[in-house]
Image 1: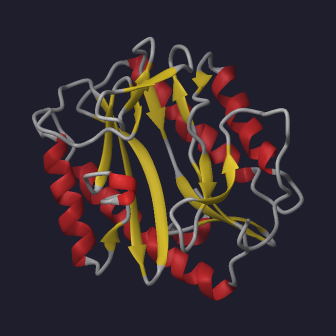
Image 2: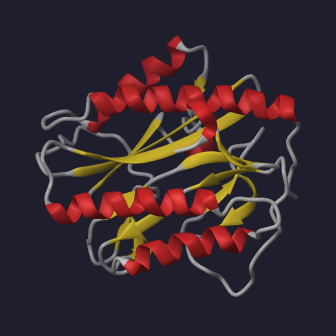
Length: 252
């Protein structure tokens, strides 16, 4: 069931996602060669507590950490560890909060020092796919229009879109209806209405779209070990257009 949010609820979701983005900024500033992903997780944990919120991922379906840190060929759900980042790596940082009874969720892929042109282009394409997807989140469109925008943008640059993981609705629960595939499915999905709040999250790969999950039961990586990038914002469908929650002015 898709839950339509009231203006008051969307105001709280703005606050949730402002916290998410502030924490991601703080973590991102600490990404550098030699830092461990476990250290980044600790930074996120301290940052969210200072803001009076809780890390939404920690304990969710048994997930053990506050942050997801997915390095290079890892697509999503990378568990922070003693692994040290190296010059030229890219790391997807995904974070969520619980605050005042609601959830926020966002992600970005960060360069570790100087990266190659191929990695930079992959990240830039994921970010552009997210912007194009957000632009499609208008009343009267369907979920499939968001999906098509992601696929079209990625494949125009020669990349594939990950099919095993999807965006989602968000509100009181971290994952709500509707699901938002990153590719155009045969069914175009529900029609978008004002008050819907969607976590839109393109995941793309430099090679094939097939993934496999590591023995830890969480970390998904590309089967061919090609680089992957992930970008995400939580977005409200507004009567006048999409509103990116947590961002001043509501647009990116």
